[in-house]
Image 1 (spheres, rainbow, N blue to C red):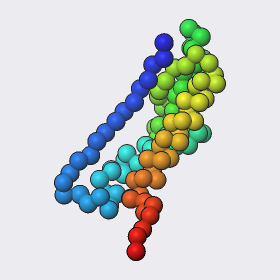
Image 2 (cartoon, rainbow, N blue to C red):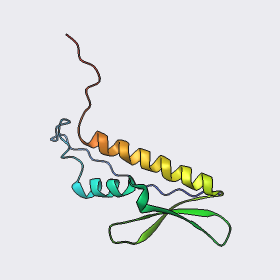
Image 3 (cartoon, one colour):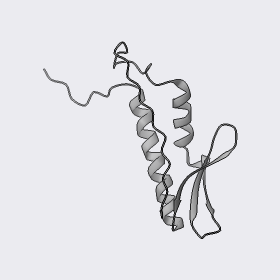
Length: 102
């Protein structure tokens, strides 16, 4: 069995402009930056034979995130998490213009 741990937050405030990144707290962005660096991740083998992915927070404590049956599966989970948080950081900078019209 595979376990997932996801923490989600939502920010909704009608007074906040979509053009600013003020709606995402700096503390949240700092955590995303930690998630986005592979050096903050590790894989440990559990007594039951599963592999657990963990990430290191700013206090140097290791936090369990997911469990996988194989090392490859655990590393893929880490890589996909890193890509996810890199995208979140990029989008937190504000809207990206993808096309303009004349």
